[in-house]
Length: 336
Picture 1 (cartoon, rainbow, N blue to C red):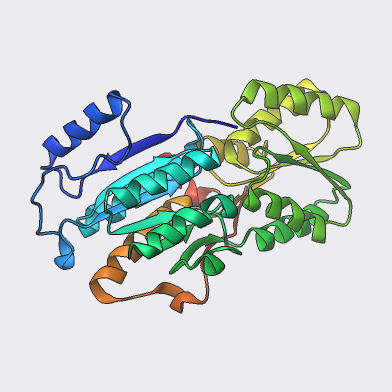
Picture 2: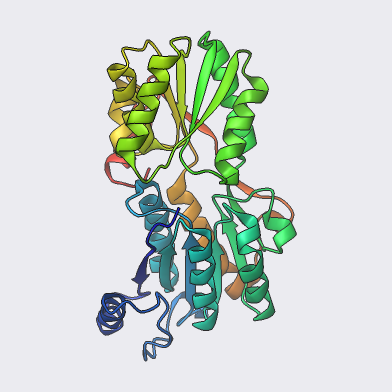
């Protein structure tokens, strides 16, 4: 899968409009997301970290609302800490590796990275460490961050989350679950379905689709539900796929329920009215915020969350019809 990368340069101070304009011009010309020194002499950031440059390198595809939440959290931390933040993302593993190498060449002061495909990022992480650039992990790679030599990790234990979903499906008396995997080879997604399979008393099947083509996702899922009417639960691994699954269930005239990992503002109403049974919230905004703030804390005070030996967990938290009102306000504001 080769999805175009996207990048956003978020200045540490609103007055740095000239630097932002330069970044826009470079991007329009097809240049690297990391254009080097923007010429700014900003040196009065919070806590003596003025001029600190941080890159967050993710693996999300274009248009995936989940990563917008991660980016918003990262931006909030950057604004608080006076950090010049670049957010860049590429669903293709080679593209993500290139983005990280661009950040290293740009001489950033810290990198936050997702390890959805750890082997692909092993080389760039090693290069960052050799260059003396601290690296923290977030979202994906909870089993890989320590072997890779990252300082800290912020995210959800996907295996634990999957097992919790399996138990919840048992409570719902489900018998046959279809786990919809929208990105083959993503270790976090595979761990979710494997976790469901460990605790769910019924049958669990994985269905692999190309998550960048939502029309194809809907068609493949509809066909599978028509083919096998014994499927009584569909578990999606991203919020945007849950509503597509609801439509597919309806189109297939299936009696299957729909549950999902992850949450966004469009899903809140579906949980509220029972169209989607529940959502597992891993708090992506918090992941982005903590990862960027951790790099600032490490530079200014030598802090390492979790002591460098344990991940900082941001989930799982179940959002159901009974408690969805407590997160609805934040979802509407685009931060949950």
